[in-house]
Image 1 (cartoon, helix red, strand yellow):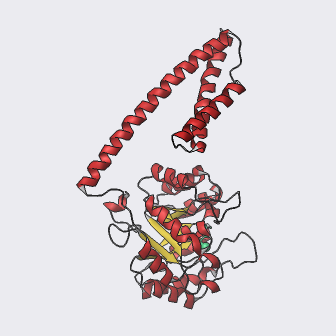
Image 2 (image 1 turned 90 degrees about the vertical axis):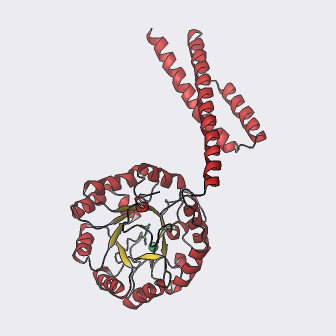
Image 3 (image 1 turned 120 degrees about the vertical axis):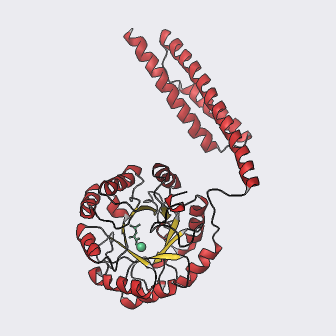
Length: 367
Ligand code: PEP
Ligand code: MN
């Protein structure tokens, strides 16, 4: 699944076969809140990393912007009183410098979504981290741009940071939704395929924006084989100075984790493996048949292109395209294919057909 399967890193779960759990308040507010939350969290045997933001990037000014450097002492106390590792958010080279000076208080840093969105900020952080060995977690940027997220990973790798994890916290919703941020799971999966060695952690708290959807999102992440979860946890959520609606108590975290079903990327069970192998063989064979059929279709599309070029007929014929869409979607529905999927597939095939025919037209023009 990830390198933690054979090699233990700071991002490996507490026990093998489990997942990494990061929990703690959105913000460190005062010493008592930090320490009591951490102490309660030690009752949850799965929690390995304690998170608390001491510098808070707020969208609007005037909101609680974090306690700043004095929160470092509270994180140090968490480490002295518990076995938890500590993590906090850094957004500037000054934050990095303070954390690096206090490695006995801060084990891990994370980069927030607003910062990942800005390559200048990421580069200045990467420069400040050059040659350091502090583990870094990189949240996805606010906008669904995989290149920005991957860009941040690349900049940190170039700086020599070896222990990197990425955090999927969802993307800015351009339409009204029940969730604070849209998950766009496909982007997280794409990130995992690009960097199979880098653990991917889901942050259901910032996706949900309210406690009500956290369980469902966390379970979906586990179904998709995520390596860990970061869940905002506060000793008294209703009093929280930031993100009050989405924080849960340590007790609620324990019961939430108990209810989650951890899925593995494979099972040692021989019967399961042989059945899975059979299914995969069928899929392989069908995929090759699909590609062969598409090849045949494209060959005919090319012949039509030549024919249209010779007869001076335009490539795009609206009536024909509408006919294709209606008849295929209807047929798709009869065989239980989602009409939206059929439409997307047809559009893709149609775009490629137009590209091929345009090439033919252009060739004919220059003859
Ligand atoms: C946070 O983790 O509290 C935070 C500010 O998150 P994000 O960067 O995902 O908004
Ligand atoms: Mn938060």
